[in-house]
Amino acid sequence: MDNESAKILAEAIEQAWQRRPAAAVFNSMDMASSVMRGIALADAEQAATIRDQLALESIAGTIERRIVRALEKSDSRQGWLALPEFQHVPHFIKVEGGLLDINEATLEQYRETKEEIRARIKAYAYPRRSAENLKRDKQTLAEMSKRDRQVAPLMAGDPEMKMREGVHAFEGLGGHRIKARRERATKGAHAPNTRRKNQ
Image 1 (spheres, rainbow, N blue to C red):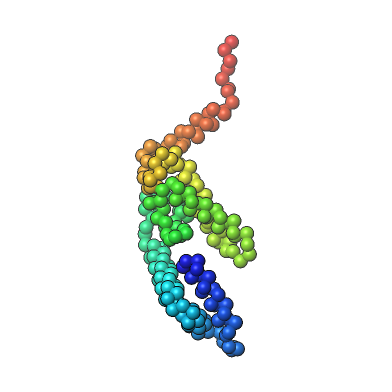
Image 2: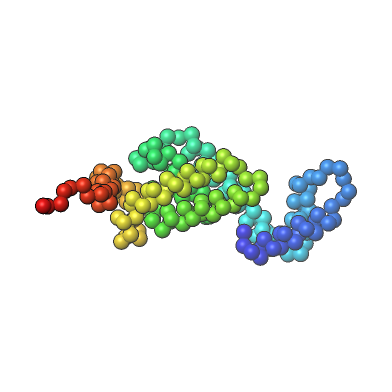
């Protein structure tokens, strides 16, 4: 909903709340009808716009919930998402503006999603936040960061490259074998020199 409509709706709700009759039971549907009647009396065209926007938002929310439930029931974890080390990275992640297919994300989109999760983790400092959700988000962030470190060097030169392509390139180069060799080389470089010096 646009800012103007949201402001008009908020003001109308406040007015309807102030006008509500004294009653033991509060009925939100009755108030909704009162709100829309009040807006329509002031501006019928604006009321129609708000009604349409609210209807679209409601339908979009229902669609999103149904898609998420369908995805949770389906076996959509294939490729790198099926690996145990990435079991907490969802195939689809809810972001501002909709659902992000992690395989179709660019590196920039992937990193923006990581930052959204990081911000959500900080929000758990407030009361009434779920400890279970906090643990899940931390696991997701850790696993996404791990994959980021692996594929970022291969994706940095192409802003349109998708995560699935970056993962494929990483695995095509030997993936874990390359990483293991680098780790062995790093350890070797810092290992003490036990060889005898030439006499």
